[in-house]
Length: 357
Image (cartoon, rainbow, N blue to C red; front, side):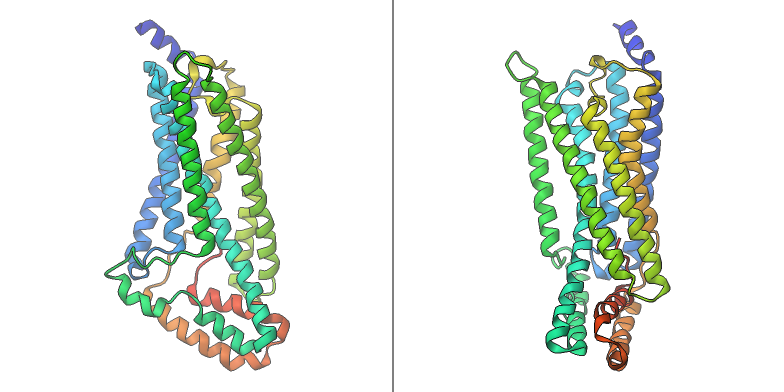
């Protein structure tokens, strides 16, 4: 029995090396994400859970899940865990993928909010005038001035969740329930019955690949729309934000598409089923890099790099918000009507000092 286990491990040395590399890289990203989350929270704890904190939490959880998956895959391949070849390995493979999907779906919801908020400001400008529309949009933001004092005592109750973010939560829960349903079917397929576990897992992988392609396309479309709107903002910060949004949109399309094609046309996502796969050394290693490293690690690392800037202190934010509104009301008479979104976007960036990312 020990000879078979040694043969199972030695026959896949390339896969062992690739999995060790993936585990190290994902572990580093998870540590960086959680450490940055702690720094952001201690620096600006009164504002509760912001977009930046939630994205750091999701990225850290995603890469921590991949770290656990790669480490357990190595142990399972060498020790011959029967459960890992079926539902346990499937769940460990699917959970980080769901978190990655939720991360970029949440990012897409933020971009949708920014694009539609700009359209709402333009419509209000036509009806009420530029000064009233811009002041109304600034006052309609989440009631931070009233809620900041309460967030110290109740940081989780007063989280402002938008309509698009509620949809993201609902989709994530549905995808998780779907994954657990497939895992139960895979477990049932271990016995003598018409259910084929590998076919069930194959169907789930194909569905997730199609969903990832659609997500990448949506990020590309809204990223392009957001860049076109942000070109009207004449500031150095706006130009840097354009490059961030454009870079993330391009990386999302390239990485998600390549990973989805590997999932659709190969058996790489089923690699937790090592004893039934035909490993071809360099070929399999290249596909693994495309599926895991290019498809998940690179987008996560890029988002983490984009959000590397620390937010300002809460007291400074309150002062900036008051001065920004005063500046807008004083100079609004000299700004042309087609630039309403420009002023709204610039005021929003100055108030929150956050990125569309």
